[in-house]
Image (cartoon, rainbow over all chains, first blue to last red; front, side):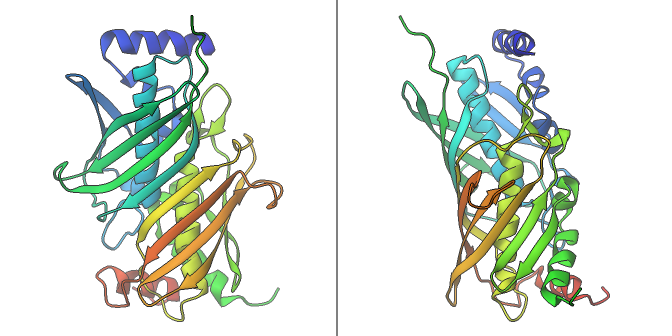
Length: 150
Length: 158
C-alpha cells in the first residue's frame, strides 16, 4: 500500500493529474473532492452534492463538509508542494465561516505561509461565486514527515 | 426508561441533516449539561488509507454538529444558530474500527452569540482525541429556514 501510494503520488505529480491521488482517500470520494492545476496553483472543487447538505430547508452545505473539504485541500496542497511520502498529519484547524455554503459548487485555494522542518502552516480560502467573496477562511497546522536532509 | 424530550428533539434534528445521515451520526445522550453524538466507524470516512484512521473532516462534521446542537440544551425555543468559527485541536488519531463520541456544551450564552466547547473521544472522555471550541451566531426565530427545521424538531407535521 505504501508503495502504491508513493507510485500514485509520483504519477500524479508528473502528469498533473490528482484524481488518482484523491481516489486513494475514501473521505475525499465520499464528499467528492476534485483537484486541477491552474498554472502554478492548485484549484480544489467540491461539486454540489445532496449528500453534503446540512440544513435541508435553506438548503445549505453542512459546515463540517466545508471544513473537511478545506482540510483535505490543505493536506493535498502540502503533499503536492512538498512531495512528502505520506499524507501530512493534522495538528489543529481553525475555521471562520463568513457566508452560508449554498447548494452549488465550492472552490478552495491554499497558501503555505510557513514550512518548517516539522510543522507547516497553511491558509485555505473557500468560495462559491467569486474568490473575493469567500464563504470560509481557515488555517491549519500539519506535522510533516521529517525528510532526510543532506 | 424515563422520557427525555430534549433527546427526542435532538434525534429529530440530527435526522433532518442529510450529511449526518450519510455519516451515520446519531444522538448518544442529551441533557442540560450538554449534547453527545456518536459517529460510527466506516470505510467511507477513512482519511489515511495506510492506517485506516478516519479523516479529520468527518470528525469536524461530528463536532460542528455537536456544538451546534448543544445550543438546543440552553435555548428555550429553537433558533437557527450558524457557526461563526470552529477550532479543533487534534490530540491523537482516532483508533480505527471504533465509534467516536462527540460531547459539546455551551459555556456562555449572550443575546447575539453562543460559546461552545467540546471533546471527541472513543473509550474515555478524559483522554480526548480532539478538543473543540466553537462560536455560534443567534439569528433569532424568524430567519428563513428556521420555521421548517423548528417544526421538524418539535415533531410537528410539515
